[in-house]
Image 1 (tube, each protein chain N blue to C red):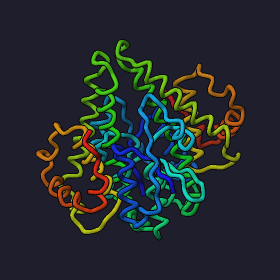
Image 2 (image 1 turned 120 degrees about the vertical axis):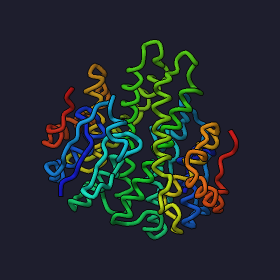
Image 3 (image 1 turned 30 degrees about the vertical axis):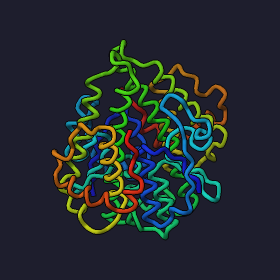
Image 4 (image 1 turned 180 degrees about the vertical axis):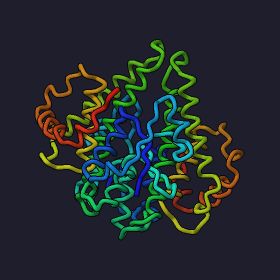
Length: 200
Length: 204
């Protein structure tokens, strides 16, 4: 079964799905349909009215989104272990995923804000989102995931950190967060992460 | 359980309606949170570092967010498969619909912040138009969906009702009922459910 994925090389939301697909051994079943920020709404609207990527399309035309639902779908398809089925482990994993996803959202909001005409950029909003990211990373530093843990939560955190490095290269998120920095260095060496590095 | 809440949040409302429909409402204590996008509530930050509502503290002391996770937790607590089908095509339709309606709310909230939180000269008309397009396209996608009218209660319908209720409070001038007459008919009936009526947002 071939699956169609609306895709862009720098979207962290897309990367989350791609890392999951690589980890599940499903990456070669995806037909990637490339889009751009300027065209995404028009390109995707028929299948996702929010005009967002990633959007997965099944052979019968059924659309699956958002990124978490896609990962859950792929995980079910592959019988994988990226999303625990039930019990406390499921709630803890999905909540940690929401934290990692929140880092992606806040970083993405900063990127969007910085694309505005200079006079319209809100310093207050940038600071607020920066602080949000800082609090989330501090919380993860305080209780970092165990090394070698690969699931939807650790994927979201790693993709979020990778996105910070990609968009805000000079920002020293590693300073004062040695546990998180060490954890990320190990996770980033996984083939699934290497195969999905953002490229302009 | 303790649920951090604010009366106008469509995401909190989704959780509250779900709890009522699952018969779990009397196990939830509401913790009112005064917060704004620019002033972080310290009590909330201890539970959810992102500072977002809703957030739940379970009886076991687990801290859960976001709204979709809390709803899944409550559904499992009530036996599972009640508001979210456990598997198969129905599960993906319901989860997709929830994501669609949450995305509609996200876009509406962004429109609202743009106007409410920024001086006029810093507002970006193209940005507002882009968010509005997401809202209207999502409404159009909900319009005429046959499953809205079956008698099952599920999280997609609850999320849709919360999104429409939010539009009524914040964007009464959008006139969505004229654009989506079938959806308006469904909402009129659905809004009479005790859970939906009891969680109606106060006028802003």
